[in-house]
Amino acid sequence: MIDSHAHLNDPRLYPIIKDVLNRASEAGVNEIIVPGYDLESSILAAKIAGDFETCYAVVGVHPHDSNTYNEAVEQKLINLASKKKIVGIGEIGLDYHYDNIDKTEQQKVFIAQLNLARNLGLPVVVHTRDATEDTLEILLEYGQGLEGVMHCFSGSPEFALTCINKLGFYISIAGPVTFKNARVPLEVVKVVPLDKLLIETDCPYLTPHPFREKTNEPMFVAYILNKISAILGLERGFVEIKTIENTKRLFKI
Image 1: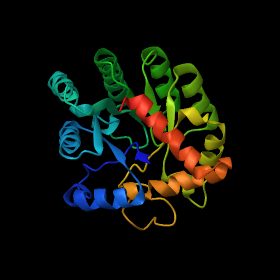
Image 2: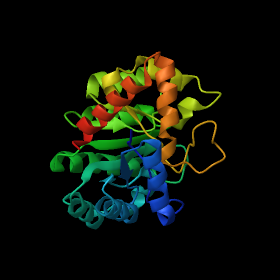
Image 3: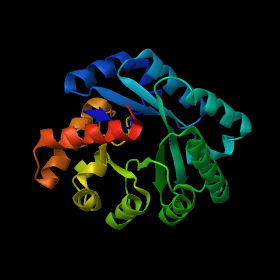
């Protein structure tokens, strides 16, 4: 398996990263993509990719950190992106869940990083929460021709299909699909073509059922794969192969 989005640069996981990677390997997770969410975490993601054979990194500024983005930060992201095993720009996007960062500022930084990804020839990892309309509007205007994934997808089946059909993006499914009260994520899985599906933990967040009281880590991606396979009525091994192929195709690894 490949965990396509794991915050091994998080303070809860980085101090024990060797143990986390050992447990992932024992669970059958052979490769992990580590996303940045600000400059510091992007630098650490790149370091992890350099230090550990199984890890790759994407670099970028999360919407909650949009107020830290400037020309100097952008130049440092460009420098990071030139390193080996940096495979994308992310996680970037819009998040209106908390009213702590101006929406206009978020949109400006989102567009800037989409343009950055285009200039660098890299795919994007998009975060969106409570901002579907604006995210889609920006992607349709500035994301055409880019490759990318809607990470930890929490939107409707209709939104997923729009991202696939109008942008060619992938949809990544995380732990919420396993939750007992999950409804919409199950419907999303049913409509996403298998060649557009990725899996992720988004660890240390969103630990899958039945481990929700534990800190999430890549070894738990197996439970997401199992749930998706059950929803689709397909052999687990077949879905596993497809998600691996999709991740490698998107990130060119």
